[in-house]
Image 1 (cartoon, rainbow, N blue to C red):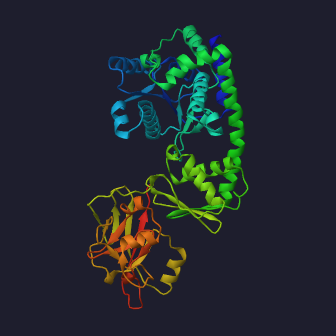
Image 2 (tube, rainbow, N blue to C red; image 1 turned 120 degrees about the vertical axis):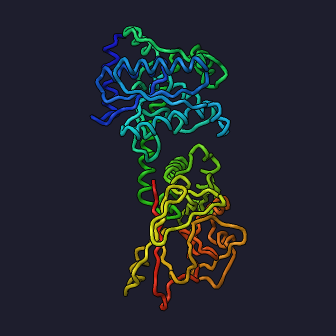
Length: 474
């Protein structure tokens, strides 16, 4: 293949998939191997500026890894492009996170690329996956067990992480690895060889080095067949995904401490479509989908059929069925989390206080004018509350629960243990230890998002009012 022909095809693929927009800026992930080197050279020659080269040193292969880093830096310099590198001891990360080295490396790479793009104000991260990678991925997923989602393989364009606003693109996904090597040979561009890719210790390598050649004896075009399977599954998945989105748009609402899904639109639907809806809901909640397995989905589907539950979900979330609705409850750590520590944060009253997780709590002295309470109750959220300031014993602090904490929930007949209150509110056990409490010098006065203490409410005798509000920081 002539180089100009590959350039034309890649340019058309980029355009057809809507990968690049003028002026957005692209972080190009370059390991030093042939695929990523070809990607960098193609994007540069296709004049898709601005580009910035990113290289993650996994610190797995000693001097070989150091050589890769120097090589990529030289490539960037030769093309007049900015270059950023980062070193991560992936073996140590894998041990800390209790996962495979391959998974730890993948997490480290994408976290680095996303963070760098955000820092540079760029909207795109480009990676060098080829059609061969897609075929290997589909076969890998078949071996592990997968459904239509997994059969769809790699997507040419996707959001690098939910809500990031940064696109991950794969401009070489319709290009075979041999075409990449031919292109580099014609352009006389060098590249590095990762010796670990030649070792049969990793399943992905065994698929590439052993299984695919064996399957090729039965079907010489097996890789093309796997890619066609991915394309077909991807198109079917896209149709179902649109149906799932319609159900979610019509039936999902969010409250401050929960998500509510109406089940009417799910009744009678195929189980796969139900799974797809739940996958999207759990993704919106912020749960790591890798921790959600078939038993979770089967349990959620049973809620559609009328079982009450509850269903335990990862990260302390639960789901239960109530009168044609599924209620997902929990405190989303990704957005607003507290660690169970003995420390506490003293609040500025009045003023705004930065909490340990980066969120803020605003304390405001407000005028108890006529109609104030009615207006407040009409518009309030679960993350704001008003108190009789004279019935609080300052200072106020934010902390988590302690043994012996007692609380008089607003409207209840009397005081009860905080533990019993959490049980009554169906708060999952893993969430109780890091649930935020606002306390005065004696006791909890507000279980944030749930209830204030009866003894601090506003009465006809109230003269001074303090309003507390959590300000979320994304």
